[in-house]
Amino acid sequence: MKTNMPLSKPIRRFISETERMLDTEITLLRKPDAAPGGTLVDVYTYNIDKNIIIFPANYIGLLKDFVIAKQCTHLFIKGAAAKKSGYKICSFTSDSVYTGMRQIYLDALKDEVKKEKKLPVKKLLEMLFILYRQFHEDINELPWNPIVNARVYYRMPQLRKTQLYILLKDGKQDMDEMEDMMDIVPRRYFVLDKSMFYARDLYLSKTLPSDKLTPVVNIPQMKKFDHLEVKEMLTTRWTHTAWYQSKVFGDNMLTIMEKHLNVDWSGDATLDYYATLYETGVSLTNALLAFMSMKDWFIWEKPKHLLAAQEQMAIYEQDALKKIFGDLIEDT
Amino acid sequence: MPISDVALLQKRAGLYIRQTKCREALLLLDQAIRLDPKDATSWYLRASAKIEMERFAEAVADCEQAIAINQNYADAWSKKGLALYNLGQYQPALVAATRAVSLNANDASAWYIRGICLEEMGKSDEAEIAYAKSLELEIILDIKDESKRIRK
Image 1 (cartoon, rainbow over the protein chains, first blue to last red):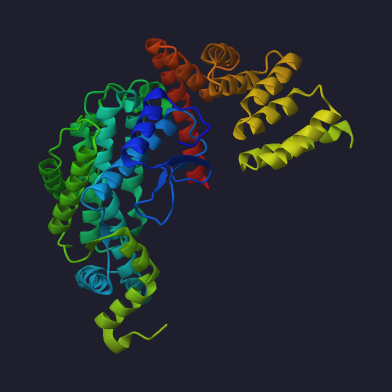
Image 2 (image 1 turned 90 degrees about the vertical axis):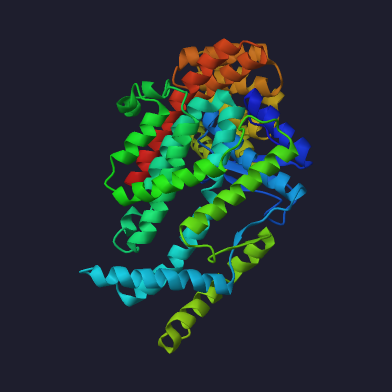
């Protein structure tokens, strides 16, 4: 481990254990403009020599420790998969981009018929790939979130209070995401996107229910959550929203999550255990894709494939538009 | 360069430290200390740069200089705690962090250093209290930062 920053004991132990088991090196990097949830740049995804966990410079204490714990758990899962069965992620090809964008277009047409204010054609065309990419990003992240959170909760009880705050913050951010696009995005996709987050929040509220929000409730901004447990906090938030459809779909997704995330979260930290967590994430991802009728939108491939596909993104988008609209689309 | 420029040197050095350009910061702070060795801020900032460069023993010495000039310099006590912790000297680090929080109870970093030192010394109950205080302050700062970001 390469760092000169103070870390609490369980985190230091966990990092050393991860390095030893995966036979790899982890560097911690503080950056003022880092994403609030931190970033993991790992040897299993990128062509680099050592793993880097980046976290916001203003996180100095337990917030920093929690971000590191989360990213390190994810690294352990990736590394165990790479060592055991092979690590793959959801990638895309020209064909799968076409399948996804075509479906979004057909659904958008249905929505547009009912709309008083039609979306300008240029915007509609742009939206197809933006939305496809949004789901690609979400499906590569969201299923791992409850797995990583549940594992950290059971593995590092010292971080539970911190975790509650971060969950609260993440959940709020994810709820706000896409809100300004509500009138642009076809309703089906808005609802599906929100449903995934709803299911995640509800799953976590059931899996991590035992801690009171103290000392979080000592903070004036958090007073309204006084006497609530995390379960109540998260469910209250969702049931008070007007997104009834998200709740209906989300309840179904919650059932899928509960079925697939049937794991002993406090298992011993072995390569086999973390490889099982990886398999669990893959099966949950597949189940969610099937539920959302997106099975052919993405393919499981080695990370190298995704990196190459990302380089070709603009070409794939253009090809898909040409296949959907034929000569109506001009070369750009 | 007149002594009045010390503040300017400190300001520029502070910016460098935030950008983790510590070598550049160090040059400016050496200059500031030469100009006015009685300015505690220069010693404190130099200690901060040295901690980033993992020169912990020198950082402790700089903090002590700052504290000798101003015994109630909370940030210098806090940095001294951090540097001592990195040297594995948990008991003196705890003393420094405790002094820091007694001077400034809103220093999340000092509460955290206090927590990790207590943890290392096997005093987990006391460590938990220090961690809780540190977390509370960190969350308040985070909420403030978040509001600022939204307003932008």
